[in-house]
Image (cartoon, rainbow, N blue to C red; front, side, top):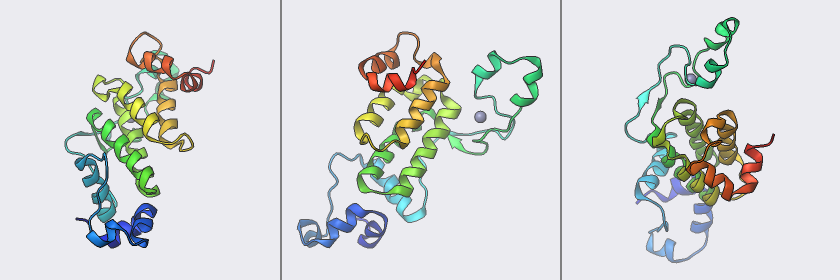
Length: 196
Ligand SMILES: [Zn+2]
């Protein structure tokens, strides 16, 4: 059981819950419906330490960035200097398997009104996608489904990150596949991705 004070400090949701006499207060026990215990563990870890980290993953090299392979494809010899940029994720630990976890944390953070955790999880999603955008282990279709069904439409943060990745890498969706099918079933999102 997490300390009430830290829950209250970190989340307007818990502030409200503990402000009114009710079952939660009298029983000193809070049940979060539908929340995966692992995800709640990371939410609490963030409350106590200001960070959380799913297990495993690899550390990104501090050498030059080679993650945006599309840019190599269209590169000319004179663009060589531009391509030798340092990776914005250098030194970070990422894994394609973390994408869904970070999206879960983001949606729980949204639900609890935890803006700093939302920003943290969103940055993690940016990093995972920067490094692993081509990796099937991302389960990109599931990620889109979770992100767009578990966050409200007015919360643009995570939605925009996913839209930006699809815009940057049309190869992820122009051909038939589960991502393309998902976009075809969500035409308003598809319009944002495929604006041309
Ligand atoms: Zn990079």
